[in-house]
Amino acid sequence: MSKLDNIKAIMCDVDGTLLNNEGIVSPMTVEAIKKARNKGILFGLSTGRDVHSVKTLLKTWGIAGLVDTIVGTGGSEIYDYQLNVEKSSYPLDGELIKDIMRHYEGMDLNFAIPDQGILFSPKDDEYIRKLAKDDRVDYQVVDFDEFLSKPRAKLIIICKPEYMDTVIEKSKSFSNPNYKSASLKTASILYEYMDPRVSKTNGLKEVMKLHGISMADLCSFGDADNDYDMTLNAGVGVVMENGSDKTKSVADYICDDNDSDGIGKFIEEYIL
Image 1 (cartoon, rainbow, N blue to C red):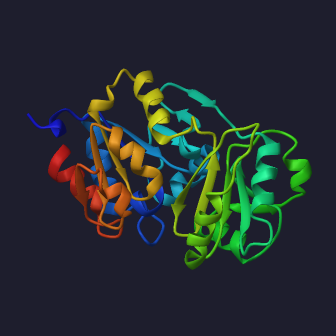
Image 2: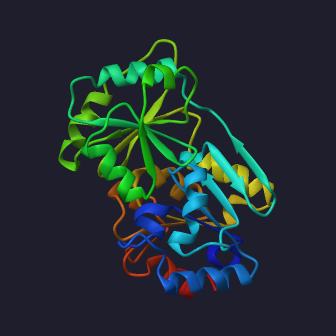
């Protein structure tokens, strides 16, 4: 008996995975999701985006009414439509975020912090404008000294793709004696810091537990490095053809890319 014979939940990353290059879910994939839900399979999103912005964009993406649950902000937020559960956990201390930002002072990049569907940034430049446009969310430039007077979910570094290696190299020399943090590349232009306890896997475990579903009966779809742990820990981990080599290395299956109905085809062929 294949692990695919007993799938009870499907959880998808959003950017580079569920959304095609036009920034929507293709009609074929929408139909496959509908059929899966009609079979009683739970369908949800597991994304680095914050829950608030995801909820406001479901209609734009073409999947309003089809999402049962959301694991947001890389695993630190949960919103469940079926059970009416909403919770968040493990934000970063504002002083730690300030220290991280100081570490990258003078470099060619900008910072963003998502909160309630808005990207907050310390300065207005091409980087924050591009991220806001790509993610279809608003951004605001604010005084970060004041903004960081309380903990925030995570810190995003935005840079050019060709500058990412420099950012990653710089990250290796960051440490703070008072606070722990974890960091990783989440897209070609994004590098993120979060609490080490935050991961998509932990968020998914919490959601599966709420619904009485074993992680063994979960099929996940992802693409980037921040989907590595989710791919590794789901019963069936599927990675897009356009995914990172690191995440592909632990995939059970590789499906077609995000612009070729990869998820829809996989659901039709293996799950329905």
